[in-house]
Length: 116
Image 1: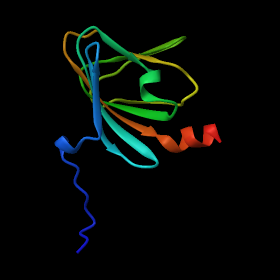
Image 2: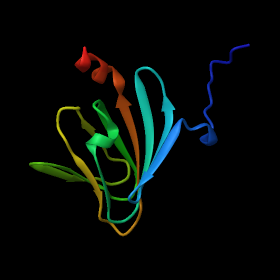
Image 3: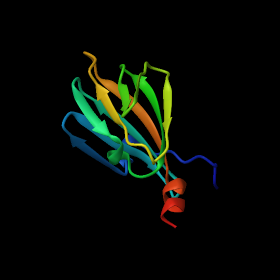
Image 4: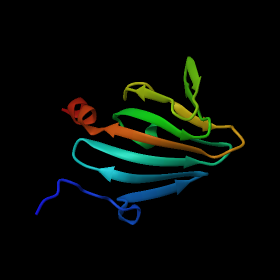
């Protein structure tokens, strides 16, 4: 019987990668979107290329990461979110003394439409 619920356990994470103080786990993936959990150590950075060519919403769970674009920047706190389209490059920097945790939703539909 189908209960309508689909539970994805942590150990079932599709994939994860760790690079220069940044741990990124894909916690859910389907045809239209990906949900990532990213932990950033103090002094670490990552850029929009690591998230692919899709529109992305980043939701800050912990810490105070800074989001930088060529002519703008924003320091976010837990509970804040920021939206980027795939056309503008950005960098995420954690220069705070504590770890930053970010939940990101990547919309693959935009990337597929862009390629078509």
